[in-house]
Amino acid sequence: MQADTGTIATPPPTVRSRKANGSSLFLGRVDARSVAGRRQKELEADLLADLGGNATSLQKHRVHIMAGLMVRQELLVASQARGEDSGDELVRVCNLLNRERLLLGLKAAPTPEPEATAPSIDWASKLLGNGG
Image 1: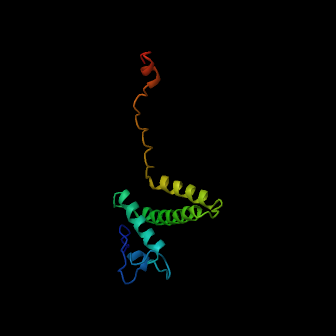
Image 2 (image 1 turned 180 degrees about the vertical axis):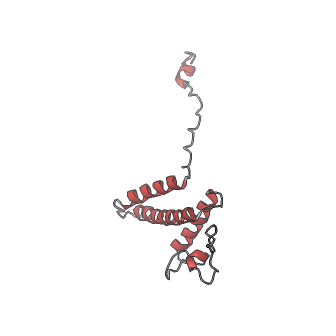
Image 3 (image 1 turned 90 degrees about the vertical axis):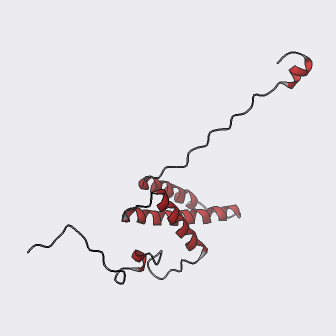
């Protein structure tokens, strides 16, 4: 008698890890109620929405990593604004974020078009009667 290998049974929630159940952001005992933990959860929800809501387990894992990097980036930018030296870590985090974005297939925000400016008026020529 052969075993059916076409489907993989999902274990009941009581057997799965807290992370797999969605009741914890992290493995182990990490309090996700901190400011950084709440921010990471918000960013994960936003990124999953950007993916259309139907993310694979690998995409969910990448979203988790990307959200953590985004929180770290925000903390580094804040420390830089306080005048502290973030060293090369901010550059590394930004590069990693961009790589994760590309791997997830998320597009970068479009560059805004420059605003059309009104044609300048040569007031000196107008006042002197030279046309313009």
